[in-house]
Image: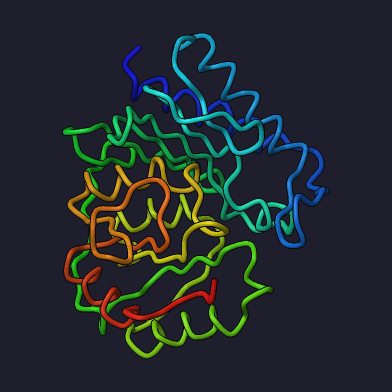
Length: 259
């Protein structure tokens, strides 16, 4: 199997587990960070696929951990757990293969709509057989998907300012609660951009490992707060068409979460 086939098989297996779940009751990793038995079972399905087809590669997964080391599969078995717990079918499975700082393949499954997004380096971004292309609207015409870190209750003023800067600039803001799926929608052109404060409490590698490649292969940019190409761990994360990304970065100049 090619790497992209392994990625698609992994998210498909996890998606089947999520759809078959009989309980959505959560435990809490933190005050606003739930985990369910389904997260764990879906991750097990991903790990089984990787063990069968790529046993020598490293794995970093949200629930069981790991590290980025050479060829590494970075997986979020259930992105949007809060949505899942509340019966909101805006959840995804995401897996990206990276070799050092270079993304190789990625797949994101929109579980509720049964849409599979995927990309391989140099081969474009796709949903099924449809090739994806980002929009490239001026920020005043753009709809921006927004993410918040798990520690947002500790710094409400900082994140309130963060949101206000975007509201003053963009046509509209959407907070949908599944970063990987938001990035797939940026690649598809359903939304024009995605922005989220980053480490230490915000964007995690498993949130963006597949989405970075999808957006870039769809003709977009993924940048950090300095305007440089974003990696897996950033203090600010912005994705979209080049014009939209530039328009988002400008009002964020000087913003700080107060750390």
